[in-house]
Amino acid sequence: MPTRITIIGSGPGGYVAAIRAAQLGAQVTVVEDAEVGGTCLNWGCIPTKTLIASTDALEQARSAADFGIELSGEITYNLQKIRERKDKVVGTQIKGIRALFKSWGVEIVPGRGSLISKDVVRSVRKDGTSQDLISDRIIIATGSRPAALPGIPFDGSTILSSNDAVLLNKVPASILIIGAGVIGCEFAFLYRSLGADVTVVEAMDRALSTEDEDISLLIEKELRKAKIRLITGVRVERVQKEQNGVLAALTNAKEVRAEAVLVSIGRALNTEQLGLEDAGLAAGKRGELPVNERMETAVPGIYAVGDVTGTMMLAHVASRQGIVAADNALGADAWMDYTVVPAGIFTRPEIGSVGLREHQAREKGIQIKTGKFPYRALGKAHAMGEIVGIVKVIADAATDRVLGVHICGAHSADLVHEGALAIKMGATSKQLGAMIHAHPTFAEGLMEAAEAVLGNAIHLPRGDK
Ligand SMILES: Cc1cc2nc3c(=O)[nH]c(=O)nc-3n(C[C@H](O)[C@H](O)[C@H](O)COP(=O)(O)OP(=O)(O)OC[C@H]3O[C@@H](n4cnc5c(N)ncnc54)[C@H](O)[C@@H]3O)c2cc1C
Image 1 (cartoon, rainbow, N blue to C red):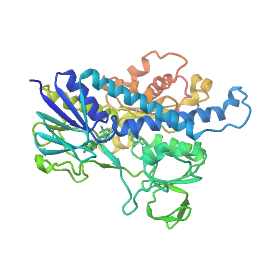
Image 2: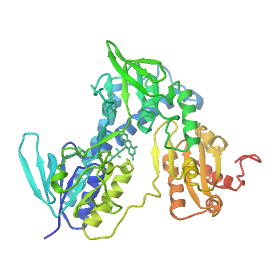
Image 3: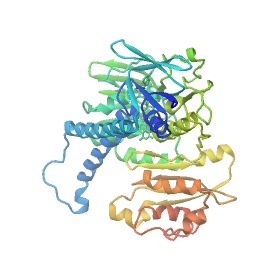
Image 4: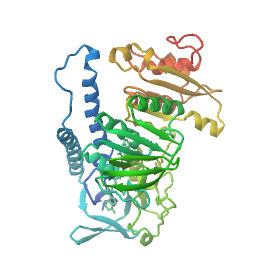
């Protein structure tokens, strides 16, 4: 009899685990409380990037004259059509996952799943009926949800979560965004393009504080250029609802009034009401479900993957973890390696980063050398009207091995994978710089930044690094 695997949650962690387990011959059941695809497909990666594609098109139309294109009439947008396009894109991907499940024989059981023992998952439907699923292996992939500010619940109209923001029911005249992390910054550019007056308040001393400092600096400059007010090193102390919006009190004794506030301060992990105790499990301090690098929890036969594990909250990390968990659940010996995890941030311009940041090198006492190359020195960037950007390569000072690549500029979330491969293969900056890159491309920037590590970039004046 094939191994019975039950997976709770069908986000990028759960659905990928399900397909891999089915490929390996398991009998797979997925318990899902909402739509397949999880946060990523329904509320996160895909809908936000689809909305951003609309605002990118809008910005392109606004700058059409720079390319010699004459548009007549007012350049405007239709919110309803933007939403419809987003829903269509999401709908297509949902159908894709459902079709994959069907083709691999993965069964979906709609309902809220919880553990009633270490080998039984109970799924309870909205109508109260339930089904118990006896399982040889269980994979918990319940993900995360937007975290609210204490005492300030989301109301969907003035106090918004990222889920509310993705629905884009209206564009407020003014919006306060709490948190200049990935989600806050992406929405800041999005709302600004749609005409909102945007203020972003960030407790840390810089926007996107987990990125390399050079990337934060550039994006802060672009936020300001877009006339987005960025206030860093300050917390929002209180948010009070008013007749026409909100009044926020900041720790610097200033106040911000806005028609709406988007709270993007982080994510709460979905480990509550999961019956963890009944299976002998316990959540950690942040609500995370601790796992080892094989994605095993403390109870043999129960695995956890994705956001719920409190590791890196990225869709592609969740998916890789899903594959590792499914492989191990079916007898393989797979493990996670987090040293090379590329990530994209879809600000304007976008960001692609992988590996060590300069501040991390300082914290770890690693001696490094860096090379930087500006987009404006690339012919392709001028041709495309995308001259804002920087490529930064970080290499080990002793071995010259590439340790990090950080790019802010057009197509950087795609470009960064060349850097990821270089790190994965143990390439040196010399090797990266010596590889012929096609002309004219943005990828030449990576070659030149790698050459700049050794002070040899052809298209930089003497002394620039
Ligand atoms: C606005 C936004 C933008 C983002 N953009 C990106 C991006 O560009 N790139 C990127 O890599 N990441 C992005 N992310 C992060 C990404 O969405 C998450 O890291 C990813 O979705 C995590 O996948 P997961 O499978 O762990 O959980 P989730 O995607 O959260 O899926 C969990 C699933 O489990 C279900 N579930 C929960 N509890 C139960 C239960 N008890 N019973 C049954 N079902 C249950 C939920 O309904 C959900 O479908 C973004 C997130 C947000 C919010």
